[in-house]
Amino acid sequence: MRAWEVTGRGGAPGRLRPVDRPVPEPGPGEVLVRVEACGVCRTDLHVADGDLAPHRPHVVPGHEVVGTVVAAEAGGRFTAGDRVGVAWLRHTCGECRWCRSGAENLCPRAEFTGWDHDGGYAEYVVAPAAYAYRVPDSLPAEQAAPLLCAGIIGYRALRRAALPAGGRLGLYGFGASAHLTAQVALAQGAEVHVLTRGARARLMALELGAASAGDAYDPPPVPLDAAIVFAPVGELVPVALEALDRGGCLVLAGIQLSDVPVLDYQRHLFLEKRLTTVTANTRADGEEFLRLAGRLQVRAQVTSYPFEQADRALDDLATGQLTGVGVLTGWSNHARLTRERLARG
Image (tube, rainbow, N blue to C red; front, side, top):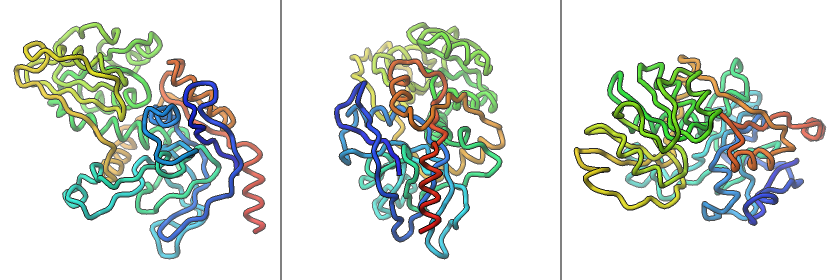
């Protein structure tokens, strides 16, 4: 099969390279999935550029995977032909105090798709059936893929923000996750204010129904009850904290963040302001969000890239050229030939 692997060099050009690999074989409790689409996430960029410490040399990135099961364990959750999603969280121990308390996203022995194990920048991927999600046939693959990380993480961040009913929410950065989170917040009656550097992103925010859209370092027009920083920019932390009203909450939603400047207690933290983070997600988060996204008809603003242009998709994300979310599709004629060889045995 064809796949893209991390080179270990980081940066462009050359952070990824195309390779030929054997089709992986599923082990006990696992499913083999033929990939239809895979979202392009900023975490993939962090893995490829070495911002996240390597867990597996030459790993295949990609953890927003939608595909069809082609091999599964008899009597398991899925059978051949089922449509599934493969997300970031791939394994937890089930024994630690975090797992036992329902906070499996904090498991010290957690493993992740596209970091610890090969992900979806490939024609096939193997995943534990217990950590895969059902994807309805009615949902196009390029729409379903971004929901599996950008959507789930944004939803967890929104929940942790503890936004009061009808409250004012600030979103710093307006990429893949933020534009999905905004749709959920707006549908739930929030007043959303977007602060981001990109003119196209600000326009998209207004088109989705945001009450205002300004530059990332501008003060919002009203004090915020809660805010979420999606951009991996530590300098925005004091900016967002200062924009909060009394008792407001700031959530940092990224897996990686540049250094945070020194905070001034009176300006940034006093009056019972709260600062918290998001660490991965639980499977319950994913199931809950996918049901909610279906009811609310959450739709991603997708830019599609052919599978052969995965390196370009990451370059566009790195340079800010990508508005909304990138999705790899069109697994080429090579994928069809691989499927035919598998069918012939």
